[in-house]
Length: 513
View 1 (tube, rainbow, N blue to C red):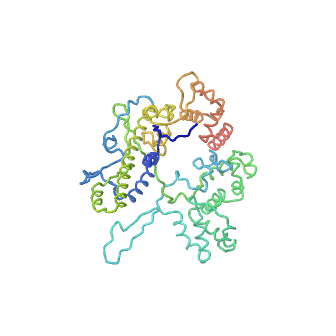
View 2 (view 1 turned 90 degrees about the vertical axis):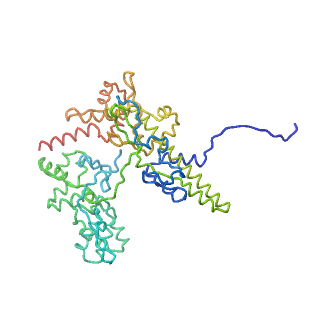
View 3 (view 1 turned 180 degrees about the vertical axis):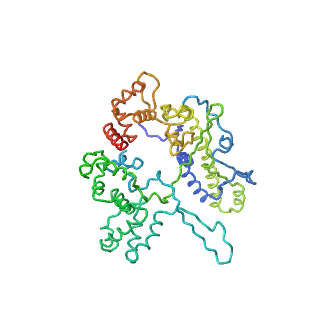
């Protein structure tokens, strides 16, 4: 067979991920905070981009292309609401011991750590006067800065009043730096002595002084020590209380009989001890100022309309307003002589245009997905969580003619503000629980809520087992397995029926006392 050279022409199609397409996909999955950071970076890199924070149209608007995520053609650019259809229907702890029954609002895994959801408001404030420049000008209100007093500042202010020796003060400042925001000292004194080159006796002596500072309970190395420091402050610390604190795990397990035997008191005295312990603060440091917690800013806002429909709007506060300054591009292009300068300007213009289009497409896609979610879950918005329907990404993707991966990116790190609270978009996607009567499937989230309702309504003489919950749910038309009930109960951090029965009996005794 002879080998001959020949020329063939073939036509084929393939998907190519261009840099612009990659950028659009990247923007789609960013949260509003990450998006603003990305836009800020692009504004620094690209001289043809500007941020317009005001709602007024710039004078040279005819020379610019403007994109507010939801700009031209985007319903969110106006004050009009979008009618989305009629809405007439709708973990393991880090510690082995569970202290939830002692302090219901404080999980054991959080003890000694910051719990941002329980930050107490503080009236402490430090007023600092900003000194003038010496030119004799009168001070104004802007010269005063008011801020919350942090735990570290509060402790450092007390340090000179309690320690006078320079070496002790140095150790004291180092210990203050090691205290977390809950007031606990997370450090090994032996390692600290070696690091500072000081005797361990000095470290312990300074620590004992610092443990007398306000608020009571700071510089504790465990929950028991924290409670002991507070009891000493109240002059209520005695050998019996000491035994009680050494066996807090028995209280957590509701082994009252063994605890009473170890402490050596009768039931009335033990009940008084339990009530006194519950009145203490397991996280004394949180009473003062703490690290500022970044609030969740919703990307979409849902409101009911007067005609029973739902109004969907993008939150303009989270949408960066980006302008492409074409007039500046024209002026600079006239002075560009070299090919490299012209190529750089052309690249900047192309990148700016793509960013504008990507932001606009991102806003449109988010709004489109949000509309479909509201349409699918209208029962939830009208009646509550019990009417949350099973929903997956594929259903939404097919309804709006998009790919599942696109819907997944849109719902990641995006939040929706509703009359029932702020929810992540992924919250509305729940698995389906089959119906026991071949009816409509039930949302797993609504089943969890139903399980919680049943357990909250139980009485001490009729605590429900997992099998009984299964039977009750099946009578309600929910076909569910026992292991699924146990899994949902664990996810809700609800203890077993045996533990709940013990807890209710203890609470009943304390209430009668």
